[in-house]
Image 1: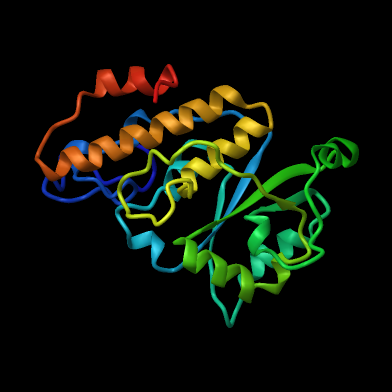
Image 2: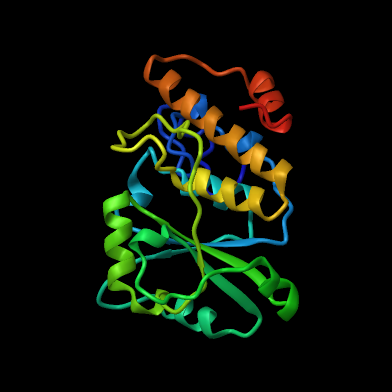
Length: 224
C-alpha cells in the first residue's frame, strides 16, 4: 500500500487515511505513478484534508513531486514563500482571470522553454468561494503568471454540489493543465482516477465492493 494508507488486516472497520474510503473500497493500491515534467503545488484550505470528497489527494498520490501547503491567512507557509523565490522553479497560478487582479502577468508556454526552469503549476484546493478568498488575501500570488482557461465540458465530479456545471474540481484542473502542456495520456489517467474515485465513493455508501481488476483497466487505459 502507498504511504499513509491504513493496513486493512489491522483495522478492517476503518477508513483509509489517504483516500478516506472504507478499507474494502480503498483506491491507493491501484494508483499509478504519472511521469511528467510538470510539478504541482497545491495551496489547500485547512478544511480540505479532513473532507472525504477532496480530490487534491489524487494529484499527490499519482504525482509524487507534488507539494501541499495548508493556507493560513495570518501566517503564510514559509516554505512556499521560499520556493516561490527559488530560481530553480518557474511557478504560475492556475486561476480564473475574471477573478484575478488587474495587470497580473499572463502565462505563456514559451516562457518555460526559454528560461529552462522547472515548470510549477499552483492550484488552490478549496470550494470556489474559498478559493477566491484565498487568492484575494494572498498577495504573494498576485505577481505570478496566470494560467487561466475556460472548460468547454461539464465536470464529471459528482460528490459535491456546484452552482456551475463547468466549475472543475481540483483533480480535473490538474488534468486540464497536463493536457494543455502535451501530457495527454497523463491527463486521461487523472480523469479516469477521478471517475473511479467517485464511483467507489458512491458504491461504498451502498456497501458495494469494487472490482480492482476492472478499475485497474479503466485507469491504465485512460477510460473515463
